[in-house]
Image 1 (cartoon, rainbow over the protein chains, first blue to last red):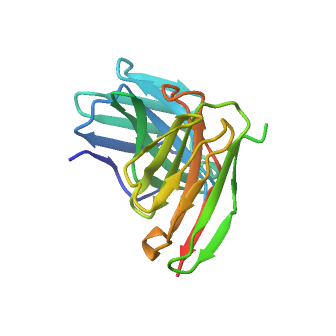
Image 2 (cartoon, one colour; image 1 turned 90 degrees about the horizontal axis):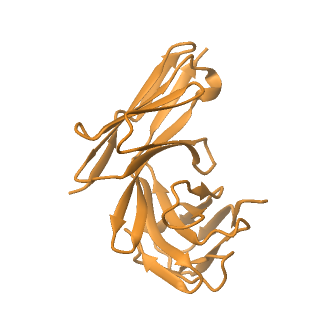
Length: 114
Length: 113
């Protein structure tokens, strides 16, 4: 069966450290993978997208890697701040004859401690 | 632009009642979708629409109906609410189905007693 897993339900790190979140998938062949941020009581907000032919993508303090052989994406936040505390979701595209939809992982709740 | 708006923010229903969750977007997006979010399960696709007059089922469509009479609006109807439909519902839109970025509304929290 198809599945998307994110490394842990919750992750606590100290301010200033690098947070690394993992997204693993099975039985998909996505053309790209996305990462979203979700704050409590709010909808997800798009952060980054990485395509299957890209190894790495960066945006300010964020970095995403994508290994289609391992079927894994890593999401890094460098120099983390308490304001980075949120739930982070990975999503990948699932294609059929009519186009594509998005499939989401369960999310990892990140807490950055001052 | 208001983006994607959803009403109501919170609703309590009794088993068997019906209701409509409203979703509207002002970005002229063709693709709209409804998800439900449950603890530990991630977002699951209920129904989606690739344009006015065209809808299709997602992963978990049972118990829900949708229609798309205009580009802007995509209401989700619960025909006969069940406790299993207690969840947070999110509407999302993108320019078209091939567009990678989805914009989400703030969500509707639904409790079915």
